[in-house]
Length: 438
Image (cartoon, rainbow, N blue to C red; front, side, top):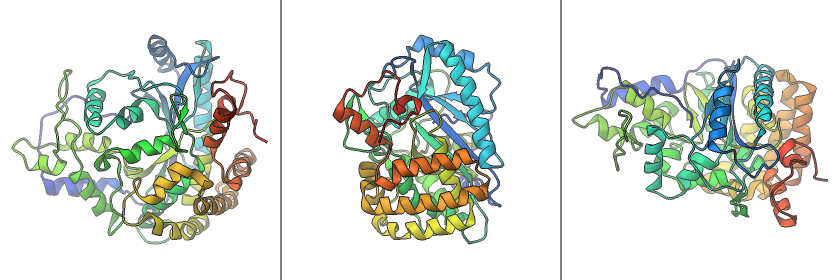
């Protein structure tokens, strides 16, 4: 969501339909041995002692100004609803990535605490309606475009947060680390990750009927923008077709309102009397939000933000192990292969497998069985990836508390709702990582 592309246009040199497809094929999958990884963590910022109260806009503006002066290794950006995002630099190992982001988060939290503010991780704000914090032409246009198909777009922009894991595309050659296998695996294993890490069952203080309300929003939105391409044939060609056939969200302009076309695909635009240029293509790519987005690397976007200060480490460690360790990747492929039948030909996130994952989480027997086996494979692989004892312990504790029991973090919030007010005084795991579940 926080993709940055200049609002200024340079001298235009139009691109043809064929050039667009060639450009996309050339930049979307940059193959080679998986050597780097990254993570993007999004957080809600709230009153330190009243986590259900969002920070007022004027205090957010002041604290974000101060945060931008910090010497962080991660890129710090702000989402449309005021959510804070840290995006790591590419790291050469799992522990390098964890260490870098953890240090940055410590620094960020210390400054926030001085302002009586804090961070919380949920896939969807449990209490508050969507509210825009950023007033920029990009987000004005996005809101206008998404409002045409329903209220889900505003909730996605302003009320959702995630843990996004970024992995190298993989080898050109086939095999467990080949880019074709990794692309396919991401779309099948993605449903297991949705289920295992679902953490957004509430909206405006009430259950929504979904373990991952955040994922339900993506499934309900315009599939041309939030859907995956068909998993048939060459991934590069499939993604290139998807890009050119996707609707144009807006046409960038000056400081005033940007035009928001109705029903114009990027292919249509290239065939028009005023075709796009390369910078328009680059911008168009940032307005597509599939569950797995190829950006040279693979950006896995389906995981809800997690509870606790360090909850984000578990999905990063598990996902990295299942993709970058050859033995674990082969095991994960065999585990999720039967799930592909439930997905059918409908692309993620709208197919039956992904919808069940978002609605039921690991309470679904097949998804629970797959999650248990995948977490076991990841646990075996983590020592080979150099994971510390603390990281391995965190994965084991998550497995025991949730995966082995057919539960996910959303179930903790639902238990609180059934038993008491979901608001907190900040003295439990939902806000500070302490275990209150027996």
